[in-house]
Length: 210
Image 1: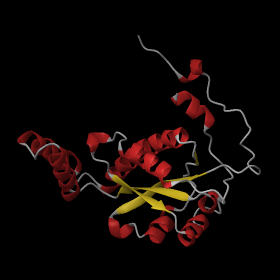
Image 2 (image 1 turned 45 degrees about the vertical axis):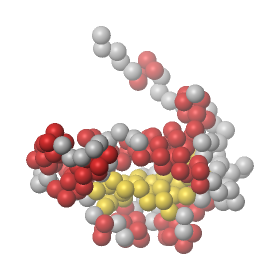
Image 3 (image 1 turned 90 degrees about the vertical axis):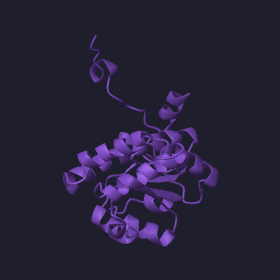
Image 4 (image 1 turned 30 degrees about the vertical axis):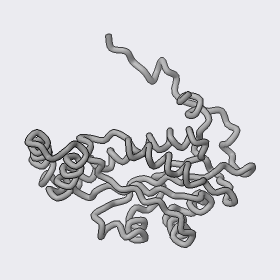
């Protein structure tokens, strides 16, 4: 059950560098991530799957020395669009049409409305909106990793400008927003591994409005 998987997972602090996540598990995580909901179905981000040891070493330096960047076997970097443009929205429109038998008048009108709402309202606002969509996909990826019994550590503790430079994101119109190393927990050296999972009391966290 999903609850069992979520109780099993934790933000792994020490990963085993000698164990690599098999590609079928990575593919399952990426498939789930791809199916994550996003606003208007735009999926305004890309995910880089980094396995190159030299690049991961650079990313570690840009992540204040966090060892998961090199001890994990795969590092997912979620990079959001830096802005919404007519060309990007048209790209999604055409992909939608290709999957649904053609760009109908209804589909065309829908995406024209999106362009009128998003394009030109400001790059900062659009980037922040795109970044929030990436976080939705991050949440799905975390649940999918737990289902695969793959350890994962979501990270915001890194230098985005350095990541963007290392990965050449600026030239792609992308900005890094969150990072997810994937691997397997080490047998020793992780202070958090045996700690009880603590979450806020449901009576405090939830309110019912009836």
